[in-house]
Image (cartoon, rainbow, N blue to C red; front, side):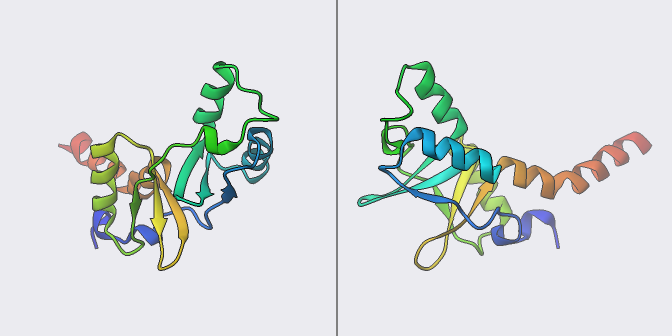
Length: 138
């Protein structure tokens, strides 16, 4: 099977970390650090958003108070999603089309994982090595 044909669920990071939009930026920063992840899904009454380390850094640069600012104020919304069974190639196309580094992987009722560009590169790196070797031999 071609690496681009494998389902997203075989490559995604799981389980997804989800937080309430009212949680403070400081609390979520601690969660990101303790869980060694780069983003969380933010649950709101209107749907989901995503908050990344980059969003937090930008907010701090802009002068937010991390103790009083809720993550809902910094999150990106709407979130781009993909189904767990979708082929990796579709996920890559979506990421490129929207210039994003993360896709929320949606299950039947809620988020089941996150697919990042790092996940994709780790999956494709054996193929990339093979391509480089082919050129080196050629």
